[in-house]
Length: 392
Ligand SMILES: Cc1cc2nc3c(=O)[nH]c(=O)nc-3n(C[C@H](O)[C@H](O)[C@H](O)COP(=O)(O)O)c2cc1C
Ligand SMILES: CCCCC(=O)C(=O)O
Image (tube, rainbow, N blue to C red):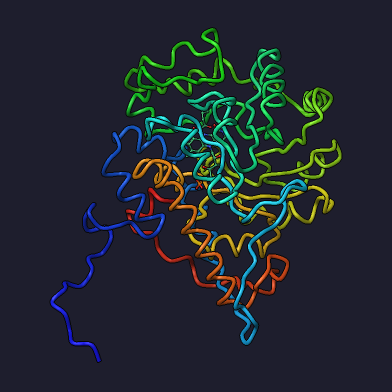
């Protein structure tokens, strides 16, 4: 037996910044210590009473796993395809505005992190790097998220630029005809620092984002001015006719909408509550997933996002029929703490945890993961600590 050493027992990672973060939540703790509190709040926060924000996590914790044993799990294969293209893992990066709020380089750093793992990145209309810059830095698959703006020619020009830059799909976010009231941002008078702007839009469409006032959020005011709240299924048909790129709708939570989308030839759906940032009180995305999956033909691929913080969460989403999950805030935490390398470490951790979860449940390939893996516990989800509140 080894003699005991005089090394102190490792501190809890949350105890000090000198400790290497291990889990995505450790990255949250470290990111929170570094970020301007208003930026932290913008990223962490949700709308209204943040009921849906908390519900996203609680939905995962209600499911427990039913492992099978004595399966050869000496090798677990995480690879799958998304819209017909191979990806190395069923975990991608959700579209998020303004990565330069947390890292000087921003989206180009994020996309390099994803590229290192050959993971999907979805870049936002409101990115702080242009979609062309991001495409040049990408080595993995890339989709563009579109907010449909009132001026259709802006949308059309973003579509053409995405086609020219090699984006492989367009993700239309349908849960934000207006931006929900996010009281943290209103209290903080949240606005963009002067060096950050929506790089994909011209000056005509970026005014007013930089001058804050208490009781207001310039992002919400900007969305009120520019988002097209009259965009409907008929207009989606217009978008469909505009491009040969596959369309994916993000923010669908019901079988009815899912069916209507599939009938219009939409190739993919992202079941999402926008990370609890839009309709407060909405059903958790994980709980909406089974009805959406059941409503569409297999050819329409269903992804889910919101609250994925562990490899076992990915496993649970796949067991309920998701083709892949997207991760939002954890990627920004990694980026805030360690730039591209930090974001890559967060993704690598989730990937390794998923591989571990597959091994320990006896599911060595994605196609061996099904609903028999799950037990919905009658226990309430574990109570959330005050810290968890910010880490939905
Ligand atoms: C800071 C931030 C900015 C976001 N910006 C966008 C956006 O521009 N477009 C969009 O469709 N969704 C946006 N979202 C929502 C994410 O795509 C995603 O649905 C959500 O963050 C997933 O939940 P998670 O953060 O718990 O993983 C944003 C989320 C955050 C946290
Ligand atoms: C106008 C929307 C800004 C980005 C966004 O979608 C979010 O903050 O959730």
